Amino acid sequence: MQKKIPYRTYLREDQLPKYWYNLRTVMKEDVPPMLNPGTGKPMTFEELSAVFSEECVKQELDSATEYVEIPEEVRHIYTEYRPSPLVRAYNVEKALNTPAKIYYKFEGNNTSGSHKLNSAIPQAYYAKKQGLKGLTTETGAGQWGTAVSEACSYFGLDLDVFMVKVSYEQKPFRKTLMRVFGGKVVASPSDTTEAGKKILEINPATGGSLGCAISEAVEAAVTREGYRYVLGSVLNHVLLHQSVIGLECETALKLYDEYPDIVIGCAGGGSNLGGLIAPFMRDKITGKANPEIIAVEPMSCPSFTRGSYAYDFCDTGRITPLAKMYTLGSGFIPSPDHAGGLRFHGMSPILSKLYHDGYMKAVAVKQTEVFKAAVEFAKLETILPAPESSHAIYVAMQEAIKCRETGEAKTILFGLTGTGFFDMTAYESYLNGTMKDHAISDEDIKAGLSTLPKVE
View (cartoon, rainbow, N blue to C red):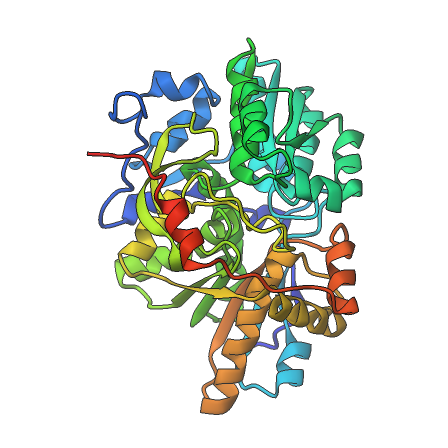
């Protein structure tokens, strides 16, 4: 007889993973290296160390170490909010009248309100261990900026946050929360950097983008002694840190002899998705299992579904290394809608390679559909989800409805990346009927991709 599955499963503290999982070690082909835009050659450890902390660079370049030990100091802080709960969505299953079993991993039980703290803590730890004075970063919806502010507060580091201007204006209390933890927040693009000034010269009224904010944050780091830049998504070492999400899911599901048939995550830069799917993608690549893995992105910024797999800059100012990824072009500025942090023009090189090789699928969805699902979910599960998370919620519900129609009792797992308490302007827009859907035109796509650098 199958064990009764509770609504919420909390692993014990001693079940918190002691190691992160490096998905690159089982991939059939490694991720193409980042390139120096000046020389066209792979970035070296020395070159990357001018931007990132040395330990993060080691992890970024490491495709051989399968399990990377989590430092004891990092695990100690993790235990303040981890392991996070795996929840059986009984109420959603009942409302949809589906034979499917729906689980979600809830990452919002911490002050930053999202999964972002999982990488912010080790990145700040490694910076402190290296003897650095402070960090710089960008943030879109604000979760990453909040998480880094919190982590820097733990370790006594200075922090400058360049927040995408449209989010800076939509979410004033998010920047207040960053300031509580000592973060200094600037609306991006700004006149405090040369990159910001150039962007404003071209388009003074721009609402900004993550690409713009990255340009400013990198410049602010490399032009000051004792500072380094930290990124909350996209890069290999960030997905490594986030693997704690999937590893906990794997352990919790095993308690009930469960394994997901479908794994769903929202996709902006790839941090949550990459962390959630890590052990299940490992099983898929090695042939141990064959889960369907679905990335969900907004129609307003569809890098997977309408972008090109090519080398591109990770920032609008074109000062970062080149990464091979699905991209809409570094100059692409998404519409100022409520897709939250899912506004980056590119996608994680790891996930891009896996998608390109056919190991996962991707769908782009409308934001009105996303918020309809978010409101339904909030009523049923008593959690107000972040807009980003709600992309995964919508598709999970759609997959559960398919199960109702076919009679298949599939097990569905999705990532609930965080809470939506700082997104009330977006919820109000949806409830008032003023929210609009925005799908970019073929001309917009063509214009964005026309700026791709020439790489031989």
